Length: 336
Ligand code: UDP
Ligand code: MG
Image (cartoon, rainbow, N blue to C red):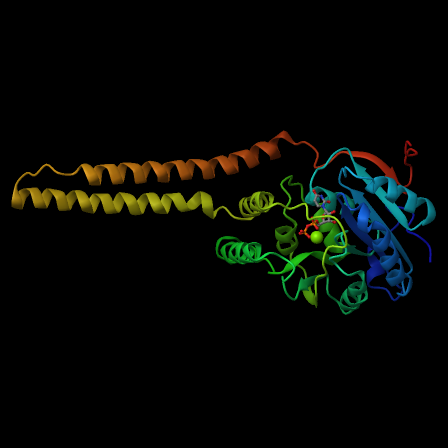
């Protein structure tokens, strides 16, 4: 089995021909030195056992602060199927996945986590689905038992809300363990947006999608890099990238409030005509004043979210910066 040498050597027709496909596995890594050896070993065993023309494993080191990259480089030295990209700093998992998808050259590309929560042993099953015609195969977690209770509830609420509010439906429990056909990878790579939300993007591009189930494992080593705050940030990013309802809903709320206060005004006039003037009313004034200013602040905040997003897109900065690469054609030699 040879490794995939050139970025542009792939042919789009290969996926439909009878020859075994070339497979790329893309793995974002952030402080994963503890699980890297085992990951490489398990993954290689699985890939060697499959009938493939060639395979490559693309590690994207997302600015790890431990010796993840040193270990990746050492593995690259002994295994020609490995390729590595090192970011100049931590740009986040979404950027790392985007970089890996751009670098991958295979007819099929599998995206998976580097902490072994995504079992490599599932790849043959995903590939079998691809052979039967699926353009994208998502590995869906059978249960979220490895997550804390509160996070499970929050995640469920998020998915329910997202479904209501957005133009794309997210597969609940579908993480970032997926196999893509070349055509889908090209489609994803062609999206220019800087605020990346892979769950939404994969659903937005469409194509024939199928799911396989798997039981998530505990993290092999280290800790999840996702604090609850970071997850919240991620959820807001996802919503604002795939829905404009939070922007539009304020006109409806404004109309409703104007209508109600109009009715209230008419009621007051009628009451004054019938019963004469009375003065009390501090409470209602306070309540309506406070409530309305609260509503206005919320809507300003929502506007701010979207304007912030426009700002990031308009600046046009790259999604990530690459410090070093190993195994790609025409690369300068990595500095030691
Ligand atoms: N990851 C990354 N950049 C980050 C955070 C995480 O590339 O800033 C990688 C991490 O190394 C792992 C995957 O993304 O391979 C999933 O991360 P994690 O296990 O922390 O997320 P969880 O499984 O808790 O969703
Ligand atoms: Mg994990």
